[in-house]
Image (cartoon, rainbow, N blue to C red):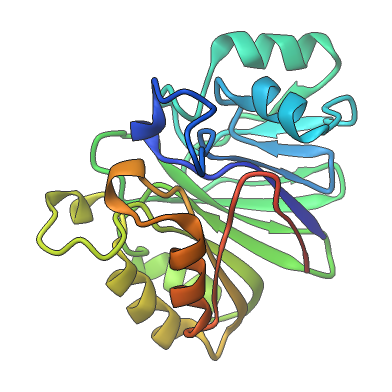
Length: 224
């Protein structure tokens, strides 16, 4: 299974010029070039910048309806090119092409429909958990069955006392989850980094590498 990150930024990147050092598009990813997670407003701009073809996308799923993760205009463009939007409610299980996908409720307080996804191709399993604080107990229970990679929300960085921990993770929360889940999950990755709450990517990546946590960046491809 291949995951390609089209964008790794949180909502506060809105309005920032793309020439800004370390610029991040809004969070979105493609699995095996066919399954798009989050048809956000930056999908086409990111694809153009990184030379990514969107022509192979067959399926689209959405974590939640916030405008940095969902654009009706982008969705219609992709659908007109032949992609199918698969609607998930919380706690759904569906077969999408060769993937089995389970959706679980995310703790994202400002959005009632926020979901995380377990995506399996029959051999590998990816848990995509962007936008949400901690993980719910039923997510932990599911993850005890194992996963090859988890992509966790890393919005807040190491900023202490930030109220947004009630709907996003800071890095200490990520560390605690890794300590509890490392016996079940092979690789830990963070994405959805806020501009105003993080140091530059190189410093962040170096710091987290000491803890065997990878930091996603726009255009990154990971194989599991």
